[in-house]
Length: 335
Image (cartoon, rainbow, N blue to C red; front, side, top):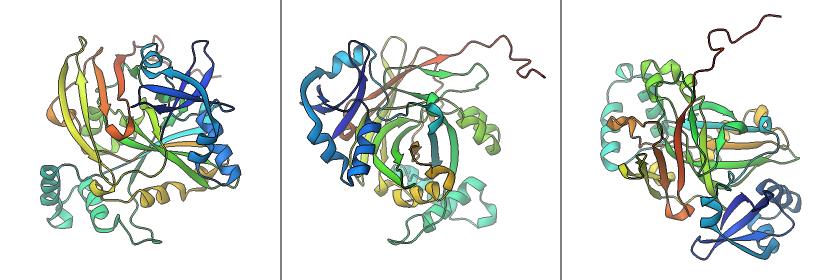
């Protein structure tokens, strides 16, 4: 089941279920957001799919019309952006067979000769998939921002004027709502473009935190239920004329990861800060496929395109570079 949030022709919020080969959205009655659906499922102590099925209405709209008119919304959001955490974990994916072989060669040496990144990756290989009921090693973790940084499919990804790079990261994101009982409830998964400044990060790994404070994109659909163990798709970049100038397959899912989803979730939600009732969490699980790694520099006006069949329509976003703010040299005013 794939859910989509959007605005109708009058600008009102709606949520619906993709049907007819993902060409149509069947609108739900009584609910206008995924958040409302999630809270209802938590209160009823039932699966989200059951609430959705019971609420299916008679209205059907064309997905293409909604997308082309820029009316898509992220598949999960909060009415108050400050109550949406956007975070992620890195060094979690094995990548393609070639990438796996290269990574293993890098981590097979003496531990003292490894970079901090390779040490972290090796820890995941050794203990990122613990036995059921146990907790494995904690992954690399980072904060991206609040709900204000999340773009829907079709919306621009804005790169700050001070950034050195704006590169895609095709990932799967877990979407969560914290119940009134303080417990995290995973409502599903979505395609994501985690979008980072790889040039800044490459200068020094301690700049990772800076490189991640960027916008991101999620959607267009939310996959209800569990994540397939093997996820395969493509990540591409189109030039300003719409021609594909770079494209490469990418994989995700636990078959292609050095951590289990449950281990990554445990090490995020073990912090009480992230279990505040009513909050929303968008958590990126990482990737091993980047155009930046192949020397690609994405230019203003070019677009990112990420597609996985199981997640329905592709996630598309254009890169836009912000103008330098006039007050950049004096950001803080003393009172």
